[in-house]
Each structure stands twice: as C-alpha cells, then as structure tokens.
Length: 230
Image 1 (spheres, one colour):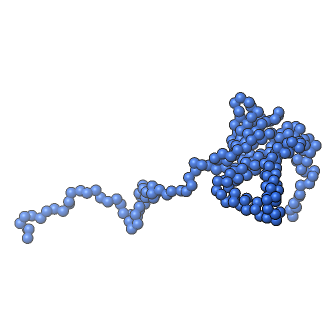
Image 2 (cartoon, helix red, strand yellow):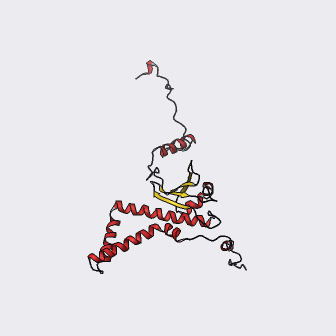
Image 3 (tube, one colour):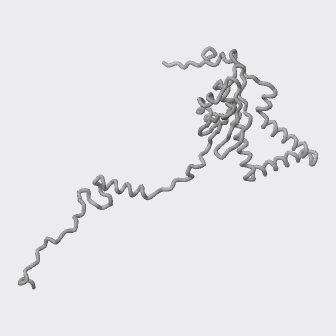
C-alpha cells in the first residue's frame, strides 16, 4: 500500500529564505513598480470627478464606461492599450522572476526596470543591475525568463560602455513566419518518381510484373516473296 507524503514546513527547501534574505520594500520603490496602475487609477478618478461636476453623479459612471468602450472599439487605440498591457505584465513577471531565481542583492533589492516599451516582436526591458548582479546572471535564466513572461524566447544584450545597463528582449511572435502553408505539386511528383525508382507501378492500372516498354527496333516480320503476293 503506497502512502502519499505531503511536504511540511520542515521539508520546504525555501523555509530558511525568510531568515537569510528579506525582500526590500520601500514606499518609493513600491510606487515606482506600480506607477502604471496608480496613474490609470488616478486618471479614472479624476475623470469621474470631472464628469460628476458636468453631469449628475448617477450619469458620470455611464458616460465614463461609454468612453472606455469607444476607446477599446477603435482599432489603433485598442492595439495601443494591448501593447501597454503586455509591457506592464512583462515588468511584473520579470520582477517576480528575479525574486524566485534569487537575482537580487543580499539586502533583497531587485534590479531596477527603468523603461519598458513595445516592439514588433514583443517587449523590450531596459534594466539597471545593482551591485551583485550582471548580464551573465540573466543569460543563465533565459528559459525561465521566457516562461515567466509567457513568451517564445528571451534575448539579453549588455551595454558596451556601461555593463550595469542590460537590455532584455521578450520575443512573443515571429514576424517572418508564414501565416499559411501553400502546397506544392513537387510533392506529388517526388512520390511518382520514388515509385519508379523502387520498381513499383507509378500509374494506376499498370501491373506490378510489367517491365518497361521495349525500345523501338526494326520489324522482325520477313516480307513475302514477290511471286506469292496476291
């Protein structure tokens, strides 16, 4: 009879992390990491307060919801918001990856994500490494970085002049990949020639024991004598 053993606190390999290192959180750092969310919430609150002064408080949420719906309905604004959403998600997932893979200082300070911008294939993160981290540390965790950001792959580029500046490209799509597959008749021709080379019938109705057609030669029938001609 097999028994299943659950992992307890004593078996947890990360149980001592809280005594070794603790994630450093400051009000300024927290506000910087959540700057996009705070800006959006502040803008929505300001828009709601302004609409409440123009119309009644009951109609202000409806007008604001209609404006947001129009923004998502327009293609170019919808694409802009979608790309910015992936940028914010990549920043948060990168910071979480740095904590889980111990890419931080002994004081618990994570690398600084100075700027994130969208690209044609995904997102690009501009990272400032703190003392104790380098670009080589990120290169050893490219697989984990791609999986954490829900991407296909990740590329690390270090600045040639300042080694603490690192550029991380998150690759989500391949712009050179074909959108659909086009069949070619060469596949059928190759199958026919393969059957011919293997001495198999290439056409339907041809017997397997039939050999190749004889080469045109001189007639073997002897002509009749002139006296016997009718």
